[in-house]
Image 1 (tube, rainbow, N blue to C red):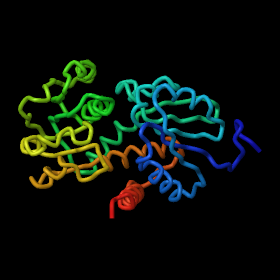
Image 2 (image 1 turned 180 degrees about the vertical axis):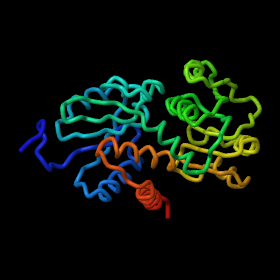
Image 3 (image 1 turned 120 degrees about the vertical axis):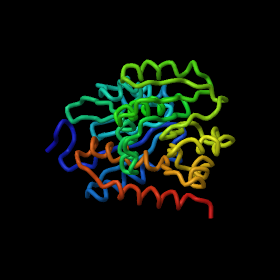
Image 4 (image 1 turned 60 degrees about the vertical axis):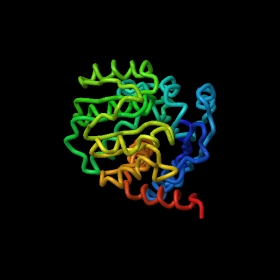
Length: 280
């Protein structure tokens, strides 16, 4: 018996795509989720850049159920199917679901993942935040902060002109957003979120931590980052990219399988994978 070309009980296929992708923890997290749910599903990884994405997706057969997408695919992903409202707002997507009727639906689970990670860390009532960086993750962060009730955001940018779309987005969401050049003095807030590349914040990490009550660095490997170390040294609440990765993956698993999995199952898998990859 088949359903829309997929044999009943057949193994479904999912994967993560991006470039570089060899370091990704997503296979470890999703396989842990499948084991917890009793699913004999496959989850692989594919090295793809933006102009390869549409062709790859077009070649996916009916056994495919989902594709997680990381950089540099989060903007190109918006062209792959019916786009969820949150992904449209953030102008970035990280999840593609292949429906059994042939439809393709595009989502952004980074937004909900960040909200859930901050909530799980007890960061309630945040009124102001600083975002370091202006890329796709920064856009999702603006949407997440608005959903948490944050009213004032400062975006720190090496090239302030690149932050213009964030100003329009914040205006639409009813959030006050200002842009500050990278070299200006650190701004105080309830929460500092770095979406910048590894090492970009290192030379000013203690300065930024000193005037911010909590620190979230979206990098998870190598860990701890200089920013995270500065946060710990100054007794701040510190969150890592693993917190974001786990909580967004919980939402991806639900979209792809229809079932929920406890975040701690994915945390355990992520920590084990990171430990295995660490230098002896």
